[in-house]
Image (cartoon, rainbow, N blue to C red):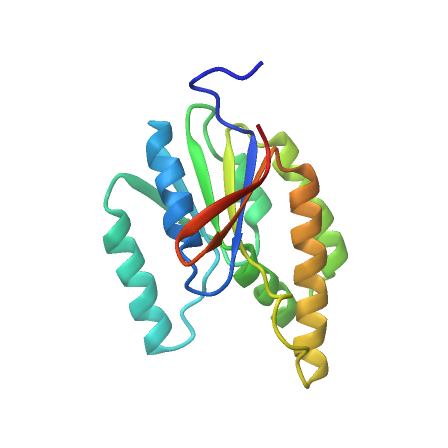
Length: 176
């Protein structure tokens, strides 16, 4: 039964690049009033990405416990405390990391999905919707797009709530 303080076990927030999806997800976390855990999957490969990561850390502030895990997201999810709420940002970068590390994508995505069902606290997941543009001209990009589409479908299937954010405006796709 849904109450005023109810928080979905798993919420998926989709959107394009710079759509406002991360900010929307962070706002949901803050509104929960719970201690905040941020699972960050980004890797700082260059100066621009290092600056972006630093900017996001400053923007979030010290109220967030940040755990940086480019690959082993499942372990980080299970280390959370029952009273917390997790922001997993983002599974798109996690998927890129898996591909670059030559991991078994299907197995990894299934493992993530199963782990989300056992997480000790609510989880809000941020992911890019990559299927609304043109088909890429190279095999690696097409493979990534295929995997990202399948991952988003798997996460949406098991999420209690799903939002799509465009130009900072969230649309609820699934949930009460």
